[in-house]
Image 1 (cartoon, rainbow, N blue to C red):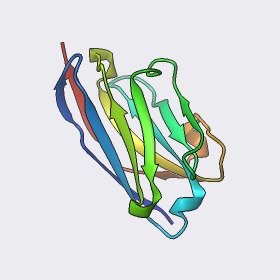
Image 2: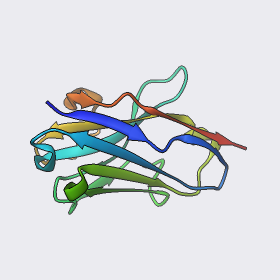
Image 3: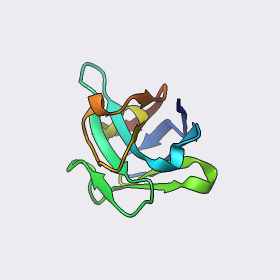
Length: 124
């Protein structure tokens, strides 16, 4: 089992930055791929970014490329999402997710472990 807890959400102005953190508890955290997803009101949950256990490969949604950066610190069992140049359309609940293996999947159904989410609101 893997337990995930997100933090760092809040209200930020358009153009600003925010860093989200996801603390994981579980014996095999270092063996898994970690991902960030988001869900805006009335919309489906969508992929944001993913990173392999070693941190050597990442994958991003086109909508956040060049603005968001995913990273991880296995010694701290934590994955981060640095969000820069935020836009109102980035407003959503952001979820951390985990899966076994090194596939940088963007599909929600391929991640069995999820956090409860943290709200990010970007004001214009």
